[in-house]
Image (cartoon, rainbow over the protein chains, first blue to last red):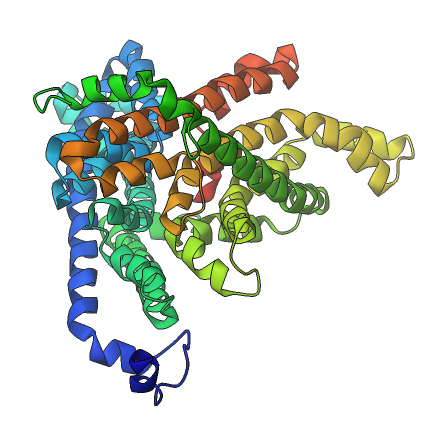
Length: 228
Length: 245
């Protein structure tokens, strides 16, 4: 009963409450920081693994099927199950979440980079070969620059879905903004907490997506003159 | 209960105990819940997305809407919808869980229905028009049958995804196989490690089984001449590919 009395001045249980945001800014900022850091690290590591894998799949065609197949099977495994497999070995820390996120982002990046590389027109490759480019020179000067749209698509997809997926990390207590959403649900269905976590999560996804689009514009100035 | 046993070994032990299958709240109960929730969510998704996608494809408008729906749902965490919907007019219980999961089934269903009608050869469409078919007849007798392989591909993607995300229903005590994993974590890793891994195996196994079975179904309803082409083009989830241009 005392619980009720002490909250009598409270204006019910609104979906949006500035007061909640002000009173809990520390918790919210910490959650945003964890969320952004998990997303950033996961996409970065996934990209560092995926790029060489994609090049291998591009150079050695027989390996393309197995690489896409294995990453595809990992992608099919539900996130909760993936975290369940990792947690007993790595414990209930942020590392478990990070490894799971990397494994998921892998497929999205690999598939799009391979598609981007395969879109390089054969006549361009042949011209490069005729100009005396070796395999590596062609890769860095011709193939990868032309595959940038594909690489960016992969990074954008991976980033946006990773932001959403981080929330599943509440399973091991490291879900970033998911912690707010989940705590709000358990904390007597505190709507403001749930909504703040959700809105910030979507906002973070949109923000990072726009950032990648901007980066794409900057590094492919030729694309702006084209169709888009 | 030896502490040295590896989590996988513990998981095998846990799965080998018949009581863990037949107890109330055991594997069989949870599996039944999981399948019931998933089936309802996919059915609801089909009910909404297929008519809309076919109609948009038929009229040739709304391509932007299809992409927008895909992008928007990609950014929304499943956990958010699962926790928000029970607090709306839907109320608590199974309904909000099914609706939340159906929302995530809609993008692949919608995108593939739209794509399925759009890819119909314009000459077939013209011929049908020339034979005097009305718009509705054209959709029902020409475009719909030709779109079936795409509908099947969307169905597979959506169903596998829903089965995977149904595991998250356990966060809001919605039942399903995810509950086994959550209960395991409730026991701490040392004591519940086996149950956690066992739950993971069950959830992952169900998702992979659904993928294999529905791929077979997809193959079955795809006319033979179209199979090889589609295997190359649409194997990696067509809906993902259409998510962003």
